[in-house]
Amino acid sequence: MAADFGPIAVFGAGAIGCYVGGMLQAAGATVRYFGRERAVNTLGKHGLTLTRFDGSDVLVPADKIETSSDPSILSGCELILLCVKSQDTAEAAVDIAAHKKPSAKIISLQNGVENATTLASSLGEEVVLAGMVAFNVLSLGDGRFHKATEGEILLADSEETRRLVTFLMRTGTEAQTRTDMPEVLWGKLLLNLNNALNVLSNVPLVEQLSDRSYRAVLAEMVSEALEATSKAGIRPAPIGKVRPWLIPHILRLPDWLFMRVARSMLAMDPSARSSMWDDLQNGRAPEIDYLNGAVARLAAEVGTDAPVNRKVISLVKQAFKDGRSPRTSGADLLELVESEVD
Image (cartoon, rainbow, N blue to C red; front, side, top):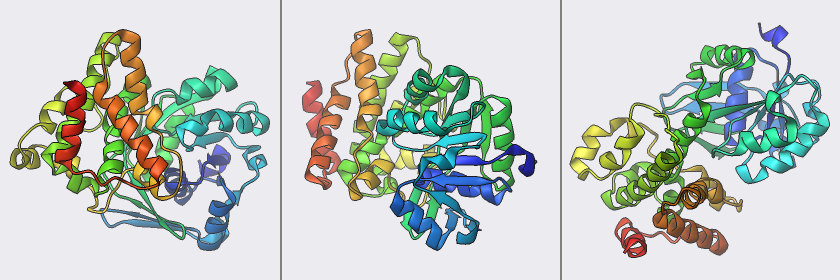
C-alpha cells in the first residue's frame, strides 16, 4: 500500500508537520518536507527523533529525509499536508497552486476554523480537506519532537484520508475520519482558547490548569464561544471525553474536585506548553486572531458579546510586542478580565 499511495508533502516543517510526517514515513509512506532553510538544514543534519509521553519513540535517519525550501518539491505529490500557522495560509495557497499536480488533495492540519475555507477560495473546494490535530507537540531542537499530550488526528472523510488513517494507526497514532469537520474544528477551537493563557502565565500547562483562577478565565472564554456558536447554530463537537457545554462547569470546580473529574485534561507531559507560547519564544507571530479572534468575530456577527476573549487578545498582542510573557498570576489575570465584564 505504501508504494502505490504516492509521495506525501508536508508543507511547513514545524512541530506538527515533522511529527505527523515522521509517523507516516515510519509507517512506510514516502514523505517530502517543505520548510524554511533553517528547518531544512536541521532535518538534513539530524533526521527526526519522535518521542511520546507514554515512552515510545520513532527514528527517521537524516539520509531518509527528503526536504527542501523550494516549493517545487510539492510537484508530483498525491497529498499535501498543510501545517503552517493560520496567518500564513493564504500565502501557502499561492505556492501550492503553482506547484501541485492537478489531482493532488490538500489537507489542512492547522488550528482555527477558517483555513479550509481560505484554501478552497484559492484552490477549489474539491481539492481541500479539513483536518485537526488534537495533541500537543514540543519542538526540542536538533530534529527532536515530543508528543506531550493525549489526542488523535481527525480528518474529513475521503478515500485519501481513510488510507492516511491506516498509515498513522500503524505507528500507534490514533486517527479517524469524520463527516462533521466544521463542528470538530469549533470543538478544537474551544480547547485552543487556552493557548493564549499559556502565553500570559508562562507556566507549564499542567501547572496552569491546576490553578482555579486561570481555569476561571478559560471558563469565561469558552462560555462566550459557546454562546456565540449556539446563536449561530453551530454545535461544537466533543474533542476527547468531555461534552463542550460541560467544559466551563468543570473548569470552575474547586481544585481538589477538578483534579479528580478532569484527569483526562491533565494527561500530559509536565513540561507541555502551548504552541502560542512556543511562538513567543521563537519570535513568531501569534495565531490569536484565528483562535480567540474567531470567537470575537462570531460574537459580533450574531449579536452576543465576548469581552473576556477581547481582553485576552489585547494582553497577548502586548506580550508579543514586548517579546516576553508578562507572567501574570491567575488571580491577577482573573481580576483583569472581570473588570472587562463589569
